[in-house]
Length: 365
Image 1: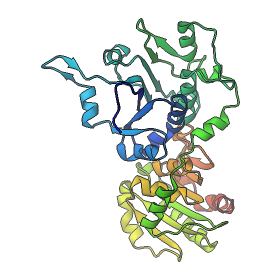
Image 2 (image 1 turned 135 degrees about the vertical axis):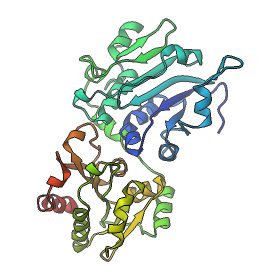
Image 3 (image 1 turned 90 degrees about the vertical axis):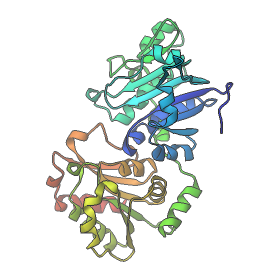
Image 4 (image 1 turned 45 degrees about the vertical axis):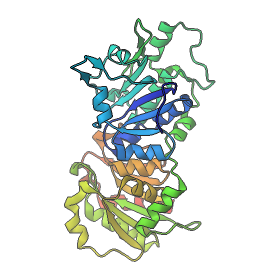
């Protein structure tokens, strides 16, 4: 669908991998609720952002390195013209760490009057997902009663929300866990809203297609399916592969069918996996498109994996999740949802004997 000059638009930025996108999901879903009349464009990795398009959270995906973004961030040096952002009233972004980003004047020159860019502060002690969500709440002036600081003038209100207002009325996020953060200014009772915004509700047609493509059947009432993902982008973030294989065998002995999933980041595990014979009712798949992986975890009851994008995806899609994490990646990257976490300074120090009682209890849930 093409935008028109009268269409109200907002452009959102979340650049990075699948896990990076999903920890920002609650904040992005909140923006959708607060901007019901706007067309939302989410800039990021198109394959992953497409999941949010299919779920109706944003209206379109735009790759950060695509021609449209190149045009927006470039100046026509022959005509000295700036690429306009027709109809875009608000630019928002969520960053893991501080870095250079265009100032308010840059956006104002392109016709964007309001900006909100939120940078995670590791000293906050919050997961990234909740930090982004709380600060986005502050930007939209939400309270449990729907009213927040209504009596303040514009500049006082902006200061309370952690944004600055320039002479032209533009706003820019500057807080990074200030003592008077928006999350602290808003009354309680928002946990349910966070949980609701953190859920990635996928269309039934997407889930059915994923199962058909994989040759996996839909679950009947009271049946369980376990998805095991033994990989991660960083090898130091992986619990040893033999432990995952034993977990799959243990699940099979309890009558659970399942799927072991690997991706391009786990190519080094392929030789070991190819040599294995999997139990009856179990299959192995690799390099799944994001939509297929999403459909699989959304249709499964349980998931076990490491600190990885698929783990965040399973949590967002509502599966029960057991995740293995290095201590130094918590609490920042803790998944939301129905998630249990086993952590240690070194994942190899989490022995199979120590983990199996937790695994058994998890699978019985």
